[in-house]
Length: 170
Image (cartoon, rainbow, N blue to C red; front, side, top):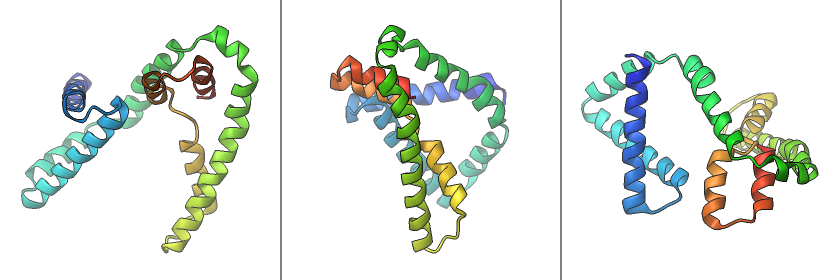
């Protein structure tokens, strides 16, 4: 299956899930899409318990995708561009010191809090995971996703200074 077909399927599913969220759930877009996607995935897994044809087809479809190319060469560039597109650089210059603190100290503190918490929780439930892997996971999830957060901040009517700080940190 070529990338055009895969992109078409993803866009159609996103539009359908967005419509369901807007019509019935009325949640912020990113949260609604995440919830609907989780429910959709669980439905596919439950259906797969009775008839594995759908799961086999899904696995074959996913196996055809070169995730390195799709994520790093295609999707990441659009996400970074979309994040930079919404950045007010004049306001960012005014807020540079809080942004610097959030982007360095804030991310470091978050990395260690998440990493240490994850390490001890995993130890408590019997999973032996090296501490460095827990820190790497903390570093991976600590920076803010500007696209997801900006949508929520705009709906909440947050001040422009706060938006600038969060976009700058990310």
